[in-house]
Image (tube, rainbow, N blue to C red):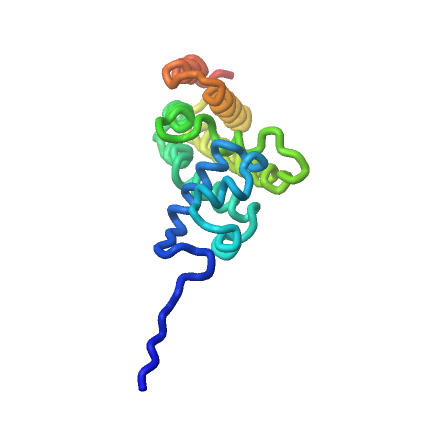
Length: 204
């Protein structure tokens, strides 16, 4: 006698559950509302799953945020890694700021940068997310610094150029672009800002 076994989706998880798509939607919620502003109801509604299913698939809210940040780094913010591959420091800086402008003002996505918006006005409940974002931004600055040090070593930048200061300068301009984008500044306006920031390169 054969016994037919029917496999069911885990309780609370809809049939056809797509973890990749759910994470994409969670990323968009965090991007638009920040860590503290994104409630579990907001997240699960956007992801199309129950809280129990969210915990089973992604862990708690903090873990979900970290995974969303990783997705953001590999997706919308991948321009930063691509910029580092440019052949000279000026092109690195130009591509980095252009990518910042395009990502923070792109159609069909929230304005600004998840890495900036995610930690604004974060209180004690958002401390873990805030620390993760501080580390994320510091990693970006470190990568720029190393690339500019390479440019100095290769003679692309003057020997007295300060790679750390140049990296901090670009990160500061990019963060400002993100904040201005949330405030309604247009892509063309912010690209003008980026162009002015690089009019004299290196600026120091």
